[in-house]
Image 1 (cartoon, rainbow, N blue to C red):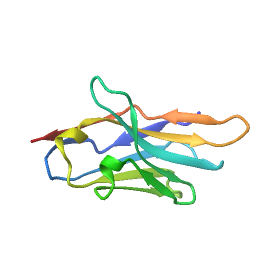
Image 2: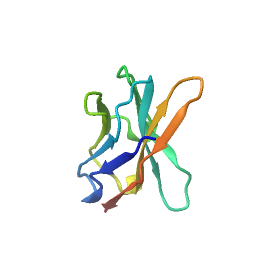
Image 3: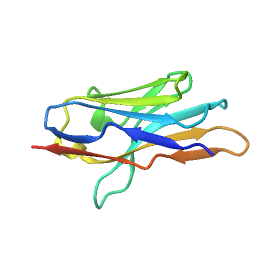
Length: 118
């Protein structure tokens, strides 16, 4: 069992920045991808950004050029740097780790609220 613990959410004005962090409670030896998802009220959870254990990244079109995902494998931690925040970025942000294998494993954080005031 892996627990994902998020931090860094909060209230920020439009145009501002926040950095989210998410630490896994255990060392992850298997090939994996880590990612950030978000869910706004009344909307489905959507992928914001993902990063493989080798460092390959992908982003939702809505955040390209503004958000940067990174990871520190030695610390089992994934980060999301969010710049130029917009009111539409407001949501609960969840981190995720997906472990590849014959029997994949998938773990989620508890979520952290990001609020962007206009």
